[in-house]
Length: 178
Image (cartoon, rainbow, N blue to C red):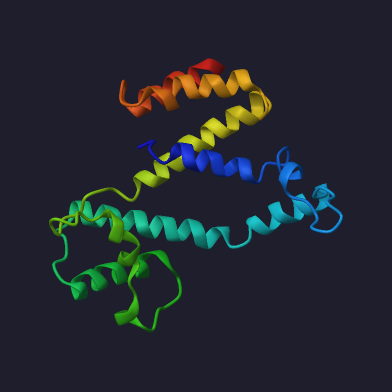
């Protein structure tokens, strides 16, 4: 699923060292952000990253549970299922079993007309993987300000809509660097 890839790709631009000095400036002196501060921001962004990835694994496991098992019919059943997955993912106990509700993160994935599971949460992670590969190629191959390469990305991926499956569009785009 590549539907989220463009938005997650563009999130990389906001903290790109090439772009930060263009819009992050001191409020009084209007001096651009320093490289030392950019490096400090990059270091800070890595804090707690393990918890973030364990949380993603937990949500992916819960998502797979909803696809593979009978979908719980009550909040209590949903809570119990999510708590069991929590226990598989985390090495520390959770004392408030009745208050654990990872499923609240899935509210937007249920079809409102029927109480059925309508989408896959783990597909977000495919989008993150796809955008990471694209970003890696952007950084390796060209400047963020290279209009020709940006136009190529727009032409190969963004403007194609549903002409081809999204994975084929991604593969076509990545072939440029082979």
